[in-house]
Length: 386
Image 1: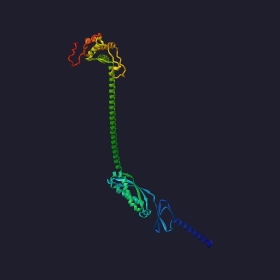
Image 2: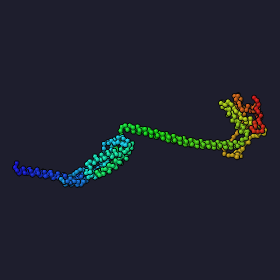
Image 3: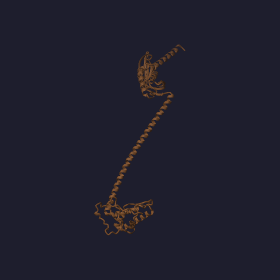
Image 4: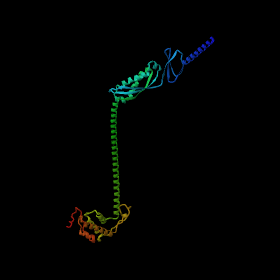
């Protein structure tokens, strides 16, 4: 190989080195920054500018990229930290921090590691806040603790170019012995609330039941009152109709005495009656019957009024009466049978049988005079001795 060939090879080598240098220079001169990322550029060791998203050109060997900062919101979970409360109980608290870098230059030049700084600041602030509370307040004041932590961290990290958005307590774990006591206390509290709710339910149930019974009794009383009123109105109408029918038939004391005698056998009809009470006006009723239907010359036939002559209502059906002779015979037979049954039983009380009355019932003889009412001038004769 001659000298010309050696020179050619050296030239090619230098040319290749030049090409590599140019390529490296171009690569270092062009920088593409992605979205939500900021790049800190230094020129000759000093801060030059902050590159945002897009295409940027740098001066080779003069400009240098110091660091890239993520501008998105970041979440950091710190390990459990032991914290002593005001009642000297050690609790373990886990925290979660949500933060975002707002000033990339301050985040790079103001602090070496802003994440570690946030962690240590969170631990110290948490101990200061929880140290002024007892265990019960610590367990029930999560929002208050979160607010105080966020205020302290946001104020301290502002000069670092970091903004703390939220601080959350992931868990608060008291000692095992305290957890057992708390469970017993919670169980007792729940039992007490359950007993109170049960008592209130029973109370409301009894109140509603009493109100229902009260309303039911009121409605039942109103129904009974209305029923009594309607029954009374019906009975009054029935009495008026009977009274109108009796006046249409021109009923006199003879007819009333006959109806009275018809009801006497009903008194002694049942088998359970051992005693038959005969009213004091029994002889008077028989005397009226004898005078009315016994052939007395001064007693005439029963006269009936025409429907138009009645002073009462005329829209009722006409009243029909039984033949007097047949009615008298039927009454005599029923009265004699009832008297004989009462005599045989030996339990006849009240007034004793009058021979004249019995003879009048069987032979149609005139009846003895009826006893006068109490308070008259003459007293009735005493009954004969048995």
